[in-house]
Image (cartoon, rainbow, N blue to C red; front, side, top):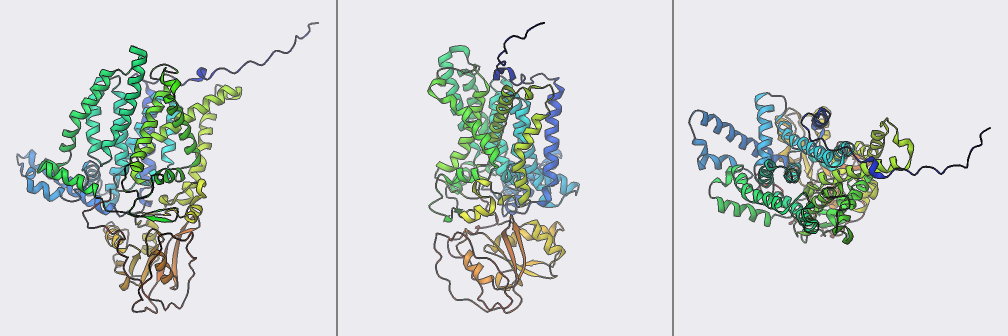
Length: 628
């Protein structure tokens, strides 16, 4: 009879390195990688196009869409003329006639918007004018997700890549900006392309040239473009320091850094000028006017913890706070962990060595950490206006999504190292864990959909807590499509309507819905003193908002649109008991109350009418001016 020996100690879990991601797919015949990229492009495009019709119209759409139509019309005429030997379209008068519209911003994004308008509205007629132009922004968003996927896969593995794309699609504010006719996702896309091209240029001479061209395209998209080089310089300094310590062991040597930098310096300006015909003539004067406009950019109000900031601007911490409370909590934690994994390479001990060899994942995590920090840091510390929630630092989010994907990969490897059950051949649990991590943010998005600019995370108590704390529950003078659908389907015929506190923006945006057949033609936006119905948007950043609320709350309420139980706008019936005027209002304190009074319908409303906004409230100076 055999006796059992003493119990053996349990085998130690294998090291993390045993679960390293597979080597990056660099072969041309890697079909799995090819179809994965194709799937990401197809799924992203399908999601964004299918949700396009639900996204409301911003006040910037009316600036950029007409300009996009003018720009692409010039391109169409110039190409047709050149094919016939007629080059009159290249004369200064013809160029100025088309490109004078919204010449305060470069042309790249508007040219792409114009191209999709030309194809899908003018030629094919598949979409209305606004949605056809917005397809250009969706192209930028799809391209951005493709770049996120490729960069993450080739540095951190496929699991991290799929999670990074999913994380980016569940950033509520970025999801909104991926649909609308503005420049913010476009500049995020072109700025990230600069970083991607510079990374590829480390090992490819062809990509050195592409990096220079990409930098010119980024500058030609928006004023944020030149700042795309800042994280590259910081990363190159880090790698140069490592190269000096390890001699020739570094994969990124000084000569290659210099070549990439020279390509950007030499190629960017010609590409920038070539893509913006407005500066073909009187180049120096018009470039000076471009920089002068942005240096003197008119102020736009920001509500931050109950205080309205116009000038002086909001404090430096406002962008960081808005970024933190408008992002799903799990993704925020993962992104910050990935950020720390990159940033720890700058600790004194790690500066003297490569922890896992040159070009290790930690180094590219530092690359993304630099990208995320400089994108938001420029807005926070440059002494420039801060407004519009998170719109000004959209270039941060692609880098942050990559860092979240990297942290997810580290989490999976840690689970495999700690528990044998996670080392099974079947890996179905990996997407299940990823979906579980993303689910809370997705549910939060669905709770406020389609009012994505009203999303706040549980860090601040969601939208009710953010409203209580004195944060902006909405901005952009949104003309929601739920409002348009209600007026078109259930609203009274031949109604005269007005908006407060900023009616001028809606007088510009409503006609677009009429042109595209989404609104009855007998609905007219008029001045408030001529209106039969008044729509009060609950934007506390306007100094006279509470006075308007107190004045109109005594009229019958026809409709209130809420998100997460918080009113976004209220429709009042003004057809009865219209008083002729109202007495002057007292000054409004800068510090706002924590919560506005509740709105209750009152059937007998003998109240004075509101007057126009106070001096100092932001009203855009003209049709051709765009917000930065």
